[in-house]
Image 1 (spheres, rainbow, N blue to C red):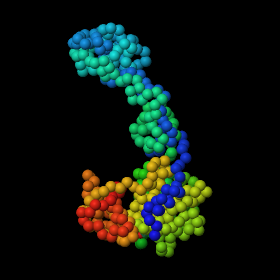
Image 2 (image 1 turned 120 degrees about the horizontal axis):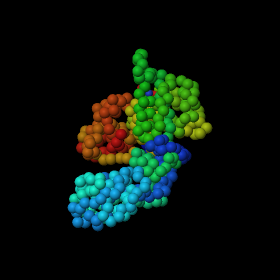
Image 3 (image 1 turned 180 degrees about the horizontal axis):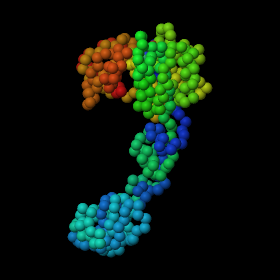
Amino acid sequence: MKSVDAHLADILATVRTLAPLEVELERALGTTLAEEVSSPVPLPPFDNSAMDGYAVRHADIAGAPVTLPVIDDVAAGSGELRAIGPGHAVRIMTGAPLPAGADAVVPVEWTDGGTATVRVERPVAEGHAVRRAGEDVQAGEVVLKPGTRIGAAQLGIIAGTGRRRVWVRPRPRVVVLSTGAELVEPGTPLGPGQIWDSNSFTLTAAVREAGGDGFRAGTVTDDPAVFLDQLDAQLVRADAVITSGGVSMGAYEPVKEALTPLGTVRFERVAMQPGMPQGFGVVGDDQVPIFTLPGNPVSSYVSFMLFVRPALRKMSGLPAGPPPIHTAQVLAGLRSPEGKRSFLRGVLADDGTVVTPVHGQGSHQLAALASANCLIVVPEQVTEVPSGAAVQVIRI
Ligand code: AMP
Ligand code: MG
């Protein structure tokens, strides 16, 4: 059997980082920056007031309380300003440019708030409540480097440098296909022997949680020809494809039957539980990576976290490898098959110190998975873990 690490290594060696493209800012959230972003101007672009108050020359109010004439009123956005002479004050709002001659701002709270004259109650130091040009960013300074995942704040600073478009590695577009003659759409009644398709919802959502654009292409029956037709129709919009089901050792395994003859997808047994039957390869003229995951709901989700998520990170231009591992103390004994790495479902305490396995460790027990927040990893050679032992966990 192939090891979990060898399978992930094969996948990461095959998938390629997506080519950069230029997008409008509205489409940049969750993508990865593919260029250096620098500011053409200093930020802030001009000296301005950090508070609502009065712009003054600090020396003029050293003997406060004093009363000064108010010679102007500047709001944020004001362009034409009167310079301040000795003994003058200008009423000023937060973000408004500091008039020439002024060197400090007195907060309105330390004054009587006057509009013709203002009584200033206390002195301020030079530069008080003044935001200097370039204090955040110098002209020409790099604010974001290539490889940065664009979140809300990163999007903000890109806009803040005046950019409307940006070069990014896009979110991978991932088509999700469920196979199984027993599957029916949630929202429709169950017939004899039928179950509602849950995997396509889980996997599409997992793609989105991982930063990709997931498309749920629904379910296909266990006919290899129908499966191939569906796959073909979906390939045009896919940077990757995920299928569930139809890869085990039984009869009616449409994914395996349809893809094996192509010779570009390998079906293997990976030494893990759940999720032993795995397939991976490329399909179509564009060599689109395809992950053929086992059908049991817990198996397909665990396989996604271990193999697909790192691959999507590589496609996005992010550092990619096995999921991050934490250590915790397990509060119950565990069993695991010899020679396989187990990923048991557990609840990790909020402080991350202790973990409790959930009831229902079967690979079909989706409700148990939904009550878990981590996978407890038991190494291949370990078959029993006593309660109280230190274990490795992967947050999910
Ligand atoms: P398979 O890998 O196709 O042999 O399926 C293994 C098990 O997973 C069977 O019990 C299937 O009924 C179940 N299964 C397969 N696909 C789905 C799905 N999309 N949603 C829920 N259960 C599924
Ligand atoms: Mg099946």
